[in-house]
Length: 321
Image (cartoon, rainbow, N blue to C red; front, top):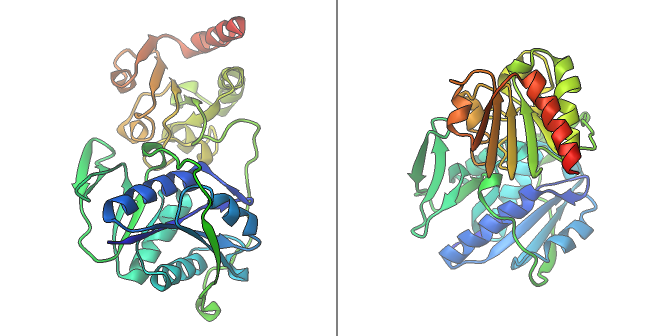
C-alpha cells in the first residue's frame, strides 16, 4: 500500500488543466496501490486554492506556505515538496509533465532517492506504465523498482479529475533551508493573448515554414485562427526561422497538444512535430507537396497553395457562422 502525493501546479492563483490531470492520474495510482491520494498546494496566500482543490475527491489537501514559495523556483519547491512527501508518508509523488513539472520532479526524485517515470501516457493494472520513446514512434512499458516513485504524466493522455466531495485542508509549515537556496526569482514575462491557451484549446491552427515569413503568420494565418476561435501554434522550423516566438512551438521540444481539431498549414510533418500533435482527434493538413509526411497522419488532406486555400477556408467558416 502506497499513499500518493499530487503536486497541484497553479499560476495567478488559478489551477490550470495540468493540476487536475495530475490529480486524476494520482487518484488512479492510489486506487491501484490501495493507498490514499493527497494533494499539495505550494505558495503564499493559497487558502482559497487549497479549499478549491479539496473538492476533487482527494483524502487531504496540504497547504504549504513560505515566502520562498511565492514564485516558482526549482530549489525551494523541490525542498518543500520532497520534505512534505517524507513527512506525510507518501511514497509516490505525481505531477504534470509541464515545463514546471519537468524542471521540478527530477529534483524531487533525487532528494527522495526515488526512481522516476517521465511523461507517462497510460497506467496499467499490473502497476507498469507506458511512455512514448523515439519521438513517439514507439511506446515503452516500464516499471519503477524503488520503494519511492516519482511520476510525471502527459497532460493530453489523462482525463482531469472531477469534483466530488470535500476533503480536509491541512496547513503545513514548509521545510526549507533558505541558506541552501541558489535560485532567485527576478521577474516573470508573460505573453498575454485573448486566444485560448495552446495546451487547452479545442481547436489549434499551426503554421510552418511554408508560410515563408512572420508577416504571413499575421496576414494569412491569424484571420483563420480568430475566425475559428482557435489557438495558434507553429512548427519548430517556423520558430527557428524567427517567424513566431517559441512559446507557440508544438512538438517534441515544444508543447504537446491534443485538441478536437488540429489544422496544420504549410507544415511538412517532421517526426519532431508529429510527436506533439498526433493525438489530436481530427487532423487537417494543407500543403502543396503531396508527398509531405503530414498527410500520413491527417484525417483530411488538401494539396493546395496555402496562400489561396487559407483565406478561402476563412471565408467559408464565416459563411457558416
